[in-house]
Amino acid sequence: METSSLTDSAAERALVAILLDSPKLMPDARERLGTGEVLTHEGYRILFNTLCMLYDEGKAIKLGSVLQRINANGTTARLIDMGISLMGLPAEAKTSEFADTCTHLRGLWVKRMAIESAGAILASVRSGDTISQIVDVLTKAMDSVSAGLAIGTDQSLTDIIRESVTSLESAMNKTGGLTGVNTGLGKLNRVLGGWQDSDIVMIAGRPGMGKSIAGVFHAIAAAREGVPVAFLSLEMPAKSLMNRIIANETGIAYSRIKRGTISRDEFAMIQKAVGRIEQLPIHFYDDHNADVNDLSYKLLHWKKRYSIGLVIIDYVQKLTDRTIKSSAEYDVLTSVSNKLQRLRKRLNCPIIELAQLSRAVESRQGSKRAGMSDLRSTGQFEQDATVIIMLYRDDYYKEKAARDAAEANGGQYEEPRFDQQLEYGIIKSRDGETGTAVLWVDVATNRIADEAPPVEKPMPTTARPSLNSFDHQSSASPAF
Image (tube, rainbow, N blue to C red; front, side):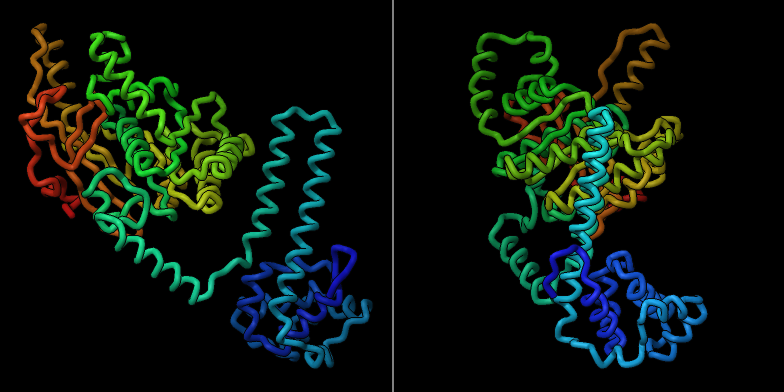
């Protein structure tokens, strides 16, 4: 089956012969080869596509039905001109070579695509295209070749069983039944088993609900376990994120660190904390370029260089896609989501997408807790996410109401009693439970915990211990 060119008509003929002789192999052929574009010989491509059509229609694949379909399509004369006859073709079948034949033909197809793509890239360079245009051509080329490599990759039942048993053994050896990356929260770990390699997690909320706090917290939690984290900050500079990490590590309010209103003792505390923080494997990206194609290459490079085990994007609607000419936000976000889905498979690690919800939540009467309907503007993200978490912090609305009242009455602002609770409303979990986890949060220091710290310990802000952290909070989101 060796050939010096990138086509092999003999192998294509052998494939058709095998399928005519053993139609039961059609599902495997479709899985391995996709459509007839893998074949180069016009005649054998006609025959392969005819077999595919009969299979897709649920009709028997026999010489008679194939001949009848060829006649109906008007391709009989063309096959005769090429000297191809179905009679006797099944007798040439060597079924034992089916798998090798499929692999060989697909390999040739991928090589042809690679050469074609290389030609397109070279033509783009020679024509004087801009760097952006050249990268567009390169991106499409990589997507095309990657898609060609992806089809036909499968796992046997034995492989899947071994992977499942290995995962189970790993969970047994970890505390809290972890099978994925530590979330930093026992309540989430018990329900989700950690962030899984197959996860695309959307953590969504309105401004003030704690998205950035959650993103930084989960990055720190994973990094403390030795998991390298890629944090794409598309909203705030890395310096601001670092100040949040310092606040989390020291217990000094983020706002004071940001303004520099700290004592010398606190500065010494920060210097010690920075030494510990420097050891955390967190890698930040805060450049102005938010194109999903460029960032995908960046993350793939980081995967090789740093062995990235968790990606956090803050926030995901900031991503763009220059290959989409439509100005409709929905179309752009849908394309971005599809590319992140492919990226996750190549990275083989969880991706956390922090997402901004629409203002419709604020205008709603009654409960401000967000639901699935508030994700309609996020394109394909809702469908592609394996886990969707809605953040809700009642203290935000308490403070807003108190300030609005003071402004309306011309009086002095009276600080309400804050409960320091942060709700993680898991409204979608493809492989687990849904419900609401009530957590403790200190916005000032970017800290989140399963429960409030003991009262005797000094705390940055007034707090009271939360009640049962899985108390029922919303009729739409039952407790775990």
